[in-house]
Image 1 (cartoon, rainbow, N blue to C red):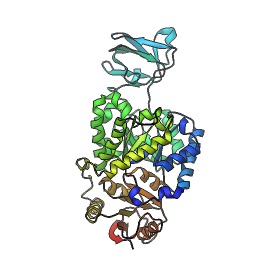
Image 2: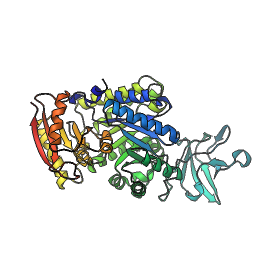
Image 3: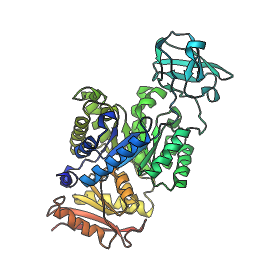
Image 4: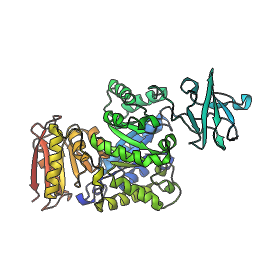
Length: 477
């Protein structure tokens, strides 16, 4: 039964992929397996919580579920980053508009009346910069920085509770976004089979390059996801997308750092840039937030998921819904149903599909030719041999209306392709006529049927990166 989930008929594949976050509500092998069977393509492990022993166990569960279902699953290591929070203090602090507040790293509020913070803001913030507390519920402006104390004036009434988040939309962290904890976690990830590393609070393309150097030095082949959640990142979107391997629209902090009404605009810009640079895009935060408690999503949430499909997002992500929610499996099942229905409507908005930046290169031209041919013939699928995954990434970025079946000999590549729009990946050894032989096998598994027309994409030298040069049209007999 498990293999039927992966080897379902080609017409039942969902193109926009599903990522689920593992947490207390899903901390068991059985639940992880059920999520994969329900349609999950990627598992996010939030490194803001838990310990290394728990994470090793979770990674083991994902790989076991992947093996049991025959379905490559991407594991995303989501780094905490410089998550700036208030420190510990008792009770609730009431704030009034116009009130002066003081902040200091490690302060004792009861003794000195200065609010504690978990990060030394005095080294980064400047007078006139905005400082938002409790996810933007209390907004302040920095009036001065004296010694190690930050002074700010409140702009509205509200309350503060210990350990609530702080956003600094105007503050330049000057490349200092990888914390000591992040670096330790990166080492852990490089030793424990993660496929993607999600970098939190990216501000510039240089932040991505710094992480890449660390990963290269560790011999890691994980790809980098740039999380767009700061105001600074929105001002350098294209440069960041160009150097990252994938991009995540982290709508929670992004809405606080900018304004809520800007988020849908940035979401569309990021998805379009992802297509331009052949990079996957992930839409995250509150996709089905009501299902943390409710057994059914709101109509607005269903519309949100469908909109992500219509604009061509590669993946949508569940956070609290699966990490701490009461209905994690049902949330995945409903998300898959919505994706499939939206996909079958044929309403992918072609105005958001943009020309790839490499359209005039050899590989880019081949990818475009494949899509043109597939559309003209109305094929059932595109079967592509790929060593590095580049061929599948490039074809996918053109947002074909046809499933892309990627065949690779590298497990890491198959797992990374699990998050890519319309791609279904399989692991097979390198061999001559691999795509043709694999297509024959797909027929024996009832994935393809007699009369289906497919395009096979291959190279003269199987297993060699960058040699894709052969396109064939084949009718299944």
